Length: 242
Image (spheres, rainbow, N blue to C red):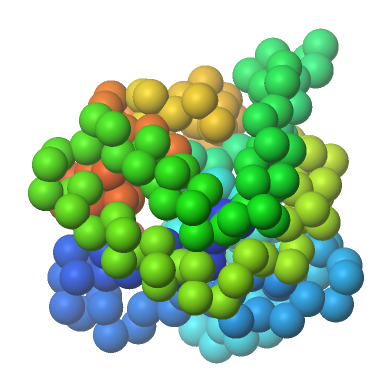
């Protein structure tokens, strides 16, 4: 499970108990450089990060990438196909910014403002971000946001915020899509303004082995806002591709 920009491995804490026990035994949630407990050398190179993670994989795994973490997962699956049994991309992307040949991207990015906020008061604005993602979640899913925020923020503001954001803006993984040859599950939220569903639809159109799932009321963190539904879809996908 590879987390996204500005978060760390604790973002997946609420999901784990919802996954069937056999899968929980092999749960692996590494931190990206400069996030959580991972050191930051000053360089945030997505290809190097993917290669370093691949070195820690001894047998083929089911790989899940959320948002920026999905880009790392795509690189890992493309460059190390022997390490990946299946791939799940949730609220993820191949390119952030729109261009003449990629209208699916964003015309404007609000993450620069978020980076400033996270640097100023990480706990306050992380909780605010999570609460916004939960606006259309079932009531019981909203109860533990304060506890989750405390777990995520215990390490302080990520030191790689700006470097990771720059990598996110500059990366274009469209040329890699054709080299993905494992089963792919795409899970997106219908209310996601950060990586809108059209970004997932682009991936679905270009990945022959992909399955498309849209959670209409979810935003950018579907595994938090709709945990049970997400866990069921993911677990069934894993079972089909043992």
